[in-house]
Length: 156
Image (cartoon, rainbow, N blue to C red; front, side):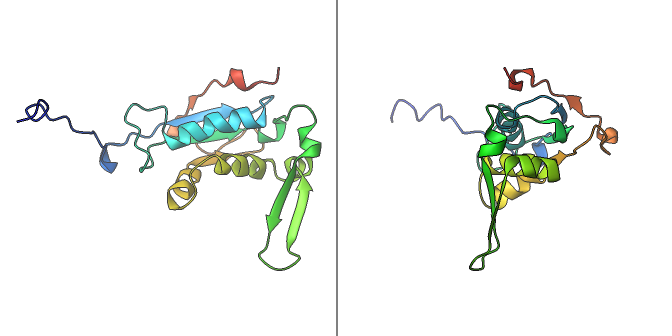
């Protein structure tokens, strides 16, 4: 009998019924796009929880308000491009991030966060827990969201 057979350790894997989902609210006014999105992606994925399991959707819900007041540093909003491809020949469309932020600020944040999450059905499920609003109003007051302080994501 080996030295470890008497006290067998088991890896804990949480059940779907045990997952507790909190609601967080983030005010994006004056925050840098990339710094905000990395923190939001971490919370949507559930990496801040001690029971994190990479094969499950463990994350919390995140509400982002004032998406239209987000900033990008060192002129990146004019330099970086956003591409959409229809799948057809000649169907590649491009625009600057500044144009996208002016037109649909919620889409700019959602795209950035989705790019930081896993690809496939698991990642798509995680993105559904992200709610982005251009202004200060949101319809999720009944969920009593907790304010998430991301002051480290401010432009320096």
